[in-house]
Structures are given as C-alpha cells and as structure tokens.
Amino acid sequence: MKNYFFFLVCLLLIIGSCADNGDTDIGTTTYDVDPTFEPYVQEFIAEGAKRGHNIDFSDTGLRIEFSETALEGASGLCYLGEHHIIINKENWFRFSERFRSFLLFHELGHCELDRRHRNEQFSDLTWKSILRGSPLTGIQDRFPVSFFGFRKDYYIDELFDPNTPDPEWSKVQFDYNESLNRKNITTKENINRLNERYTTPLNQYELEADFTLLTAANTRTRVEWGASGLSYYMYIIPGWGYYVGVTLDNLDNDIFYSNNTTLFNDKPIEKITIRQQADVTQIFINEQFIFHLDALPALDYYQLEATTGDAFDTSFDIERFELNELE
Ligand SMILES: [Zn+2]
Image 1: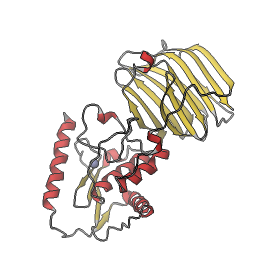
Image 2: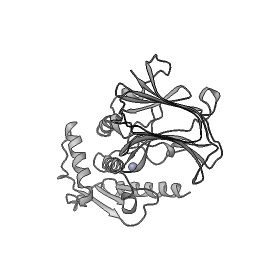
Image 3: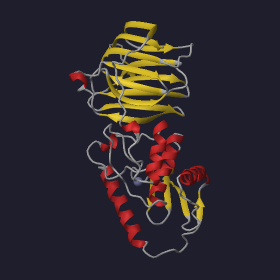
Image 4: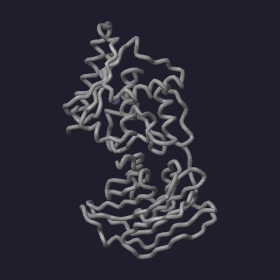
C-alpha cells in the first residue's frame, strides 16, 4: 500500500515538473552539489566521457541535496527537467558504496540524460537497465539490479545508450556435467551446520553440499563463501525464493533473485554447487546452472547454516559436503 502511494507521488512529481519546464531556464545553470555526492558525479562524468558524452553541467546546472524526510519509500528522486536530485539521508548512510553509485547513476540517468524507467528483463531475469523503477508489477520489485562486477560495464553502456546490444553474460550457460579433474580436499557427512576455514588458497575449486531444505516459513538457509571483506552468499526463503549477492562493506548486496524454489528437477532445493574456474564463479542448484559472478580473489571460508527465527536450527541436515580442488 505504501509503495503504491509512492508511485502516485512520484508520478505526480514527474508530470508536475515536466509540465512546469517547457520554457524555464531561471537559475538552472547553478551547480550546487552536496560534497558527499561529488565523487559519484565525477565518476558519472568520466564514464560518460569514455562513451563520447561531454558532460559538465555548465549548460543546465545541477543540484543534489539530502532530504531529511522520508521520500515515501524511495531512496532518491529526480525532478525531471530541473536537474535536481534529492537523496534520503537516513537511507544513504545505510548503503554500501556499490549501491550509492548505482543510486546516483540511476538518478542522473533521469536528470541529466532525460531517461525514464525501463522495466525489461533478460531471459535470465536480470534487468536490462539500471533505470528499472516504478511502476513495478507483481513480484518485480524483488529483483535487484545486477550492477556489480563484470555486469557493470554493460549497465553503464546502456545508461548512456539504450540501444546497447544484449550482453553475453545474459545468455551464458554452464554445464553441470562438464568433465572436471577433482582433487578432494574435504568431505563431511551428516552435520547440521558448516563453518569451514581454509588456510591454503585455492583458485579453482568446487564446493558442493547436499541437504534437506527446511521449509517452515520463518526459516532461512544461507550459504556464504569467500574472504572477509569480499564474499558471496545465497539465501533461501521458503515460499518466496532465493537471492544471490555479494557482501561489501559488511553489508549484503543482493545481485540476483529467483522465485523458483521447488521446480528444479521437480524437487525442492537440495543441492548447491559452487565452482570457481577460468575467472568465473558458477552457481548451480540441483545440478542446474543458475547464475555466475566474477571469480573471488580468495577462499578463506565456507558457511552453510539454517536459522529459524533468530536461532540456528539444529534439525538442519547436511548429508554431504565436499570441497574439491579443480585441476
Ligand atoms: Zn527512477
């Protein structure tokens, strides 16, 4: 209900500003950007320059400021045609650097490039544009923008040129059954929680766990791997779906979502496989490829656990876990 209200507010603002700005240039060449946002504006200018856009705001001005009040559920807002962006202050300080630059690029897409929202998804269900936004229908608002790692370049290309061809990464498939040379490092069986620490760095590896998914509504199953400072995770919410993301600045950043928790081989999720090889991290569920990410520079730990409410659920059954080095 709250979100719906916001869409209306946002729409009114957009229509209002468009209607008001047919002819005005009064005061619009003022450059008044809160110093907090200056690095992101400079990054936007630099990315534009790489793509043949000469942006300096001298013709239009730019105003970016904090709003102390909630923006009805939004973290940022652009008054279209006015080169005026407001960012919710409380939200800003809860965001990772990745999300902050995503937010500013999105708003500058409206305010400097005069773009509107674009809500199309690739066949892998990732968004075609960082300009995805209201109105979102059905469960669309659960899908995060995959603005991270090797996908970032495409999103910035598309921001400056909506005719950018579909990126290769939106079509890539990896084969679970490809033949691999495995050297077993660790095997564990029948435990209720995994918290493995690794001291020997591995560049090419496979982590695989078979388990019985807990299905009560308030349970969460989470797998996390990598090194402190940079790690990936996946968590499953029964009846909702699963997210894949990256932990940055000690914050979860969701990168991928799917609501498909029961249809893999007509079975509930019961096997997660993570492979890092050839500079890519591949994730499989029930032996089907679901998503890929940049290779991680280090593998220091691996965790797999389930919680019910706030407590670890000791009834979680991990039947088998293996770490293999891939040669
Ligand atoms: Zn927007």
